[in-house]
Length: 256
Image (cartoon, rainbow, N blue to C red; front, top):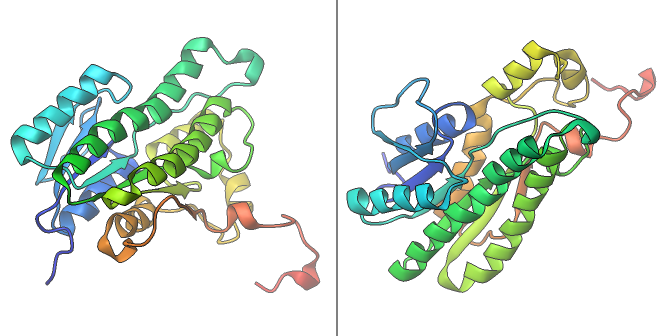
């Protein structure tokens, strides 16, 4: 069976769990050599994934991780920026520390990793693909998620900028914006009451949360040669949440 990523090297940030883990597993299945960059230990280590301890918000830590990829693999073909954290508070209660933590992890982390990957991809001269995890929260407003929404909207903006900067080198830069996905981040929100499960599902036209693999597959597609003429785009994968009109409609309009 053909493996479209055979001979390619991929780095996935935040791959110790959740969506990042699903992406790493998918790339591994498709033949890639996969490196995880994460501060945390993997919940379920995957055979074939090399786990590097790295803080994506720290330039020295990121440079060290990419240096290790150089030594162990000698190239980088795919970068997936997935690492992220969440802090929930209204604007007047959001601490500067939490604000900077969220922005630095998502947005600065994307920039630092992109800079390292692009430098290597450009020097090698064989192109590459970068896919970053944005969010439906960067498209619509969600109370209490100020830094998260700002960071995710920023990821979309950086995606467009870096796509224009690298297109001539055949480096494609895209993003995937998930809606609510059944990860530990969501499970924690359900547990602490900052997320109400029935409220979310009621507002998703497809009537359910996404599974991590349903986000991983579009990421893998955008990283593959099947998406060879796609760059600078954000693919929204949210079960229809961000395109719906009225949430509550008349019975005679409900065709489900």
